[in-house]
Amino acid sequence: MKHIVTAGLMTASLALGLGVFDTAQADEAMDNETVQTRQMLMDGIGGAMGTLGCYMKGQCELPDGVIRNLANGIAFSATAAPAAFEPNTADASVKTTAKPDVWTNWDDFSGRFPEMKTAAMNLAAAAGDKGAMGAALGELGKSCKGCHDEYRSK
Image 1 (cartoon, helix red, strand yellow):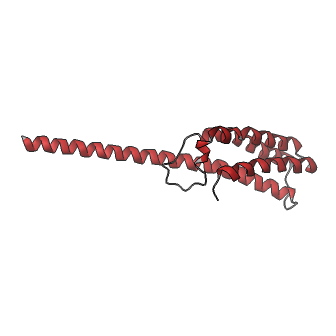
Image 2 (cartoon, rainbow, N blue to C red):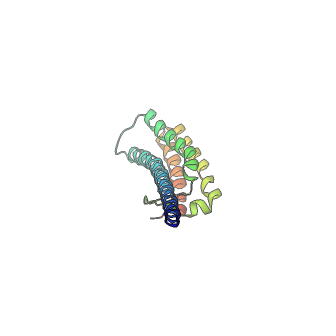
Image 3 (tube, rainbow, N blue to C red):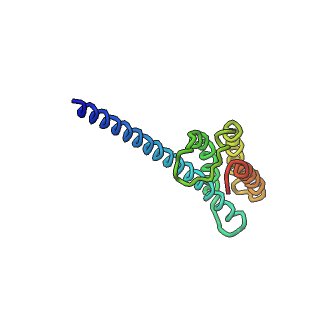
């Protein structure tokens, strides 16, 4: 009887330990997915900025509607970004450039996105006027750079 109780306790302990391991793996998988979602969101902004830069340098042509769509896409991403960054993913195994300051200085970090959205909307409104677009793209670039300098590791 003593062996049965001991075996039962060992089995229960092992099952509990595996359950914790599975939970930890599930948390890491969710964190990894969250990080990858954020990376796609930021990559989309970067791609749009690169395309707009190409246009402004005269290296490619874009119709005004495409310029507006790119700028509006950045504005949409600025709206979505705080929710995408809100989960602290310290347990993720996916490599990320987000500094821990994102979460320790959350109010400052998340408060930067409305400025980005406004700058992107100003750029969308300027489509068709390269002079106005240059100033608006400059403001948008400053918004991106300010956040990257503070909250993104190199």
